[in-house]
Length: 202
Ligand code: SF4
Image (cartoon, rainbow, N blue to C red; front, side):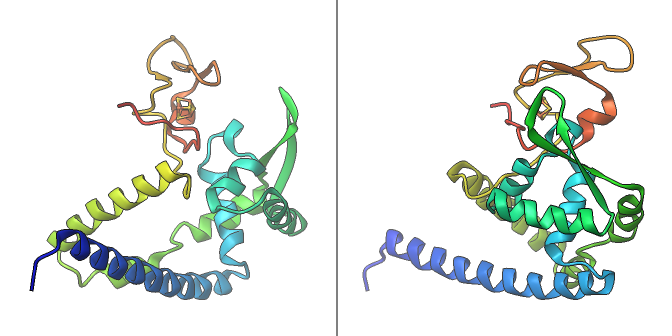
């Protein structure tokens, strides 16, 4: 039989695609069980975590919609459900009133303190796998995520460090860092939060 590297790669890619699909189904089942225990849906938990870890001005309905790959209308429905439960509040962005910012209420913060271990079942499931395999998996998944991000299938929010727009230690005082994109000084704490506009430096 003639070795055909192109064909081999296609077959391998198809197997990986199927494995990822099966994993996504299993993860869905695990996270559903965890979120049921909290009286929330997995997507509501994602919204709470988004508002917790995303930097203030970037924690918008639009960015949340992008981060979960849904429409603005669907994202609004999810957020409204959390507003009704008293877990989240909405406000208009002062510089652009068309943009809605998301903030956790104190009740929402309380709930988040209980969901910081969300995804724990998945971590447990990975425990028996060797460190070497986990390292390779991390590298491989990183490559897949990077390709999906470039294709626009996925939004990966990251802190400021390593972003092309980040100017660390540009100022004295409480807001030492500067973002060239939004043209604002940032506190160190703000720079550690996730930002959907993060653009990796080459
Ligand atoms: S420096 Fe980059 S990651 Fe930080 S706020 Fe600006 S765009 Fe976002």
